[in-house]
Image (cartoon, rainbow, N blue to C red; front, side, top):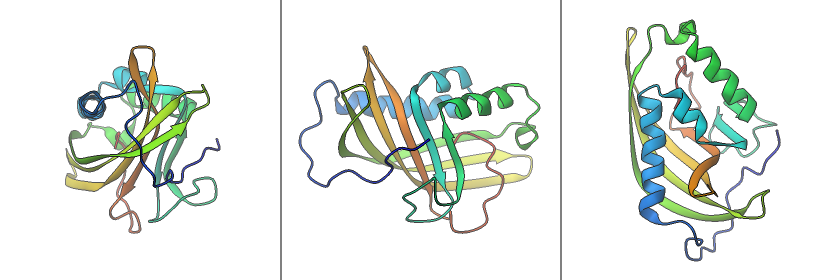
Length: 178
């Protein structure tokens, strides 16, 4: 489960062919909506076969294999996590949380070569997630970095890193899709 997780070079050219700003934003908003609506099948279908989903447990973390993570899932583990949630017996989500993701400050960070010989577009966004559940309401905030890959006539997530603002403090149960 190794993959480069550091930021790309700082020299940015134009957004690579095959991507446009509106489509990228709509893709990110759709990913957030699927998580909000617990549409696990649609959310899972967004991921590439070589995907990584990472939530570091400390600020300035660059190596998920060598440092503590809250979540560090490859594509197989994403699928397993969602199978558990779909059973309805995942007690961290019984009853399920009501969520609303808000994204802002979406910016293009560059492009990266991918294993298929193409380019993954790297974008980042600030986010707030309002979680309401029986134990109370919690506000989660941070910055997410995405690598988006053109696959056929659609887009897929190859990588998502979620850096929580307070990831250096004890984290309450994170039993939902952040």
